Length: 223
Image (cartoon, rainbow, N blue to C red; front, side, top):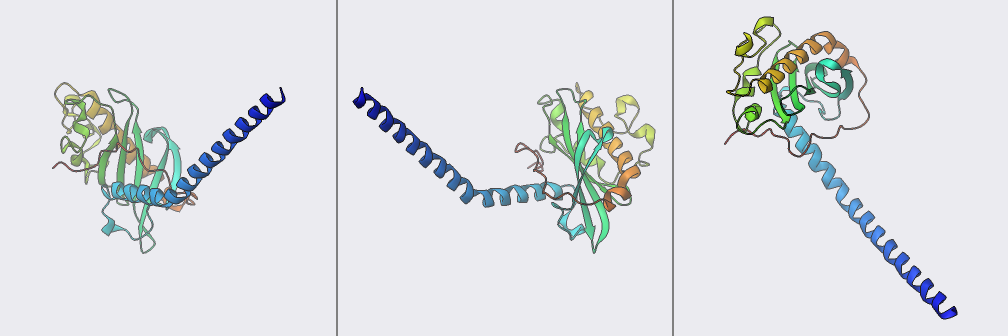
């Protein structure tokens, strides 16, 4: 019995030692890779923000000059990035969720300049039908570029719809729901900024850099 107890103790001690070594290796790997991983994520986030607002238009730290807001027009609680030049407001870049896509929520980035015009819109995540609704993705078509320069008054309220609904924006053959969801989300975003833009620029920044959009973000231009 005494010999068996010693064997159990030795096995337990050996297992504990292996666990300690494993935990140490994991902690060391995390410590060594954390900084480059964080830097890579920040660089990717900045590239995506600059897709809707050129870096030449602002001079502040865009990824850290942010506020969190909650409003149904932009799909709930979202991050807003604030672009400034010489300390003066230039534009807001909003993360936006259109909950009414055909296959689920559609996530967007929308840049709105202080004059109320769109500097750009990109779809960052969606699950729309390949070959039909996925034309909202810039890699599939340039449809989303039609938003650039638009305002709440250009087109007028009637025009902020797909052609099938009497508006000016193209729908896709066999997939009207998807572009309709994006058009309506962009218009609601412009309305939100018109109401809250000044307050957003004046609000205190949050303390942490927001997490970047998901890895499957789709922002690259077509080849």
